[in-house]
Length: 419
Ligand SMILES: NC(=O)c1ccc[n+]([C@@H]2O[C@H](COP(=O)([O-])OP(=O)(O)OC[C@H]3O[C@@H](n4cnc5c(N)ncnc54)[C@H](O)[C@@H]3O)[C@@H](O)[C@H]2O)c1
Image (cartoon, rainbow, N blue to C red; front, top):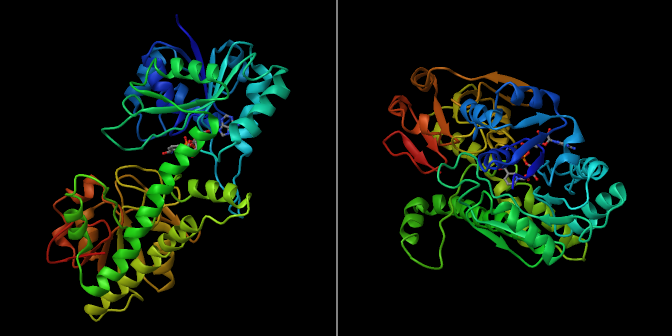
């Protein structure tokens, strides 16, 4: 039976979902409030790294319909909400997009349909925030008249091995029937679907995964600082520890954490923990440690230049890679930004090279990227490898640099110093 799906929110999460659904011969509508995004997609322009024009052409040929008109919800058997969940200025969850999208869904919801929330959020959101809005707007009852579930997205932008289809997908419903209907839906295009007890457990599973990463990255960041003082090569120690076949998973230090997930999601959990009178101290500590890394890297830049009898003030410092992770173009929460702010405060003349970014903004200043890696390395007093994009690491031009501070532990050579 052909089923129809509306994906609400056509970003890094919604678009790959729409793509797999199109491939499984569903009729797919893509609903977004951003008319520029919808216009771009309708004319074959993708704005995310993991989908190119060919992918989009395939989707459009399969009947994919990007739209700003919510009427498509009434024609859909399944509605999946993938809208952003940022933080407010005070660090509390900002669920405005989730609430607005849910209100839209509620106004068009039909009996017998399935609604799934995929946005990352704190445990209780599906049941206590989404459910009442859907019921009030539709006059229907969740669990009786329509199914409601939560399924966390595990997408890893830029990962060539693990995509939506081969990454197991966790699903938790309001009732066991809700869980079953969400499992049946995802089994159409995901190899392994993992049902769990309920919506809260599915919501917590996502936050547990990201908090685990957050805490372990911070552990490595803290160790990087004292290993440098002790003259120990932390990267070699990690490589050695990694040979243990059980009980250890390798994490790596870096210039700070970025992106939409690691710096933000654990705050959703600490916020809900505070509501029951506790502080989530490990998360707070991890945040404090990783937040200090850009300043620490700036300090290491100063130390390196000092070894050449140079001041940071007036030195040309070339940032290699300014996005939040390797091989993607997303600059959200990139650690390159606080690093650039620290270096600029110290008087450095900052330039950048990034094959994934034409411009980079910090302190309200928009820099245009260097277009020749070799030339820009030759001009720089020091280069900092911030993101190990393949094009940079494999370029063969890095030996032109006077000095490189490698914050990713992937380079070697006489001119390279690792974090
Ligand atoms: N990006 C990732 O790697 C990733 C991974 C796992 C989970 N997530 C989670 O998935 C959710 C979505 O993240 P994303 O990275 O895809 O965001 P995004 O910003 O790339 O895309 C979200 C889209 O939703 C649209 N939107 C906002 N409000 C809307 C509304 N009321 N109705 C319809 N569309 C609306 C926006 O215009 C935008 O196009 C977040 O909760 C995020 O934490 C993201």
